[in-house]
Image 1 (tube, rainbow, N blue to C red):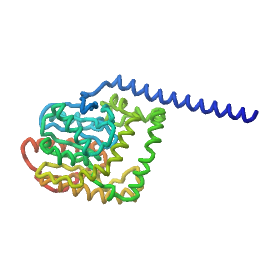
Image 2: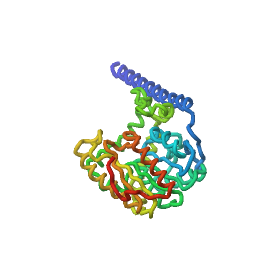
Image 3: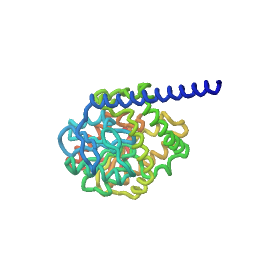
Image 4: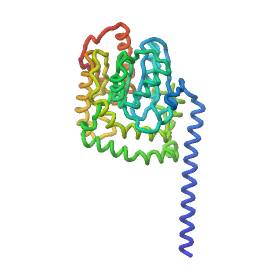
Length: 342
């Protein structure tokens, strides 16, 4: 009798867990459906190689500024940048495969594939060339591939704390271990996201200060489990992307603006010793990026972390606006190859 009673308890417990899991998954899925219907598609969706890709363009003028987000981010990352720069020229942000409103793709998502998809999107959407390509974080690697293989598309490059090819061989081993642990935990995070745990905590609907105008789109793009797969695809291809771009450049006299985080500001989620050690290496890699062109300038954004466009949006907008005017006037940097703190 005791065994039968225990079996019944286990069975009811299992059924209860499955019921709760089902309710949580339905809660997350239905919430996403609701927020997507409310937000509606910003910009346009294009068919690129049989998969949908999202492009959001505002403003008029040339050269066009094309914004490429960091790992795990979508076009809403540029909420403090695109509306401002759109007063000066045409600005387009887009979602890479699997992020935001762009459809996931099977296979390897390395620098070669990502650059080719963007090049096709530019052609299909009839974006005027040459344009200025602006990229944050991991997009710095993809931009190098793009510049090496589609140079006729570009009027200039802007790296916003851009990643460096094969940087994992240079960063502190302790930081690499942290990143490897984060990668290992991603399937667990996807499960919790699917079951609605993060939505229950309110993480899926919180809007950072300064992003209020994009709130509907942020809610529609938050806590999408399939986006974890897209992050994993790019992370797993990071070494390959580095091998594809380690010898990319220099790019002649293509104007290149480099915006870097403040090396004196510690990363909030890392041990202080790791952050300090990494700051030295990262600062050196940012400095080396000036060698990608005979016409380059590096600006260190004082007080800024990795997301400079969030911490110092006025600085980012002012520098890119000046960069656009410089290109329009066929000028070069007055302080060519300098490193300036602002």
